[in-house]
Image 1 (cartoon, helix red, strand yellow):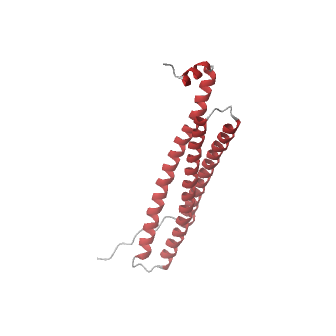
Image 2 (cartoon, rainbow, N blue to C red):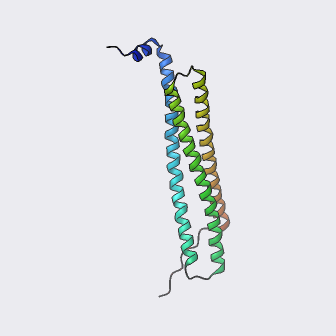
Image 3 (cartoon, one colour):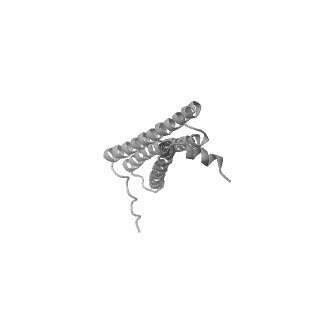
Length: 164
């Protein structure tokens, strides 16, 4: 018993089928890259969260040094800005990943020759690219905030040893 779908594919020129496979793989590779970026963003966000906890713990200890506490408060403001940047980068990366999946789905829904499918494909893949560029821009913003803060404020103060 012959499969009608396979008979239709056999009638297509090999270059056309190879082109469709290449196009279908593009969103998959993009999705893989976005997944790697999301892993990087989440790891960085976890480190920033650890710094926030450390700064809050240092503010709560019994050290009444106003200069130290002011420095810690500046660090907390900078760390808050970084969490906003990274949260937004993760959101943009997630939207880019969803758009990549949508582009792959559109490819499997119909032929690229169909103008309505082609329009959706361009919209979904364009959205994936725009969101990924936005996520990378936000990540760059986080890096600049981190570098600028370290240059301006220096490293976070260390806990003072407790007197025995």
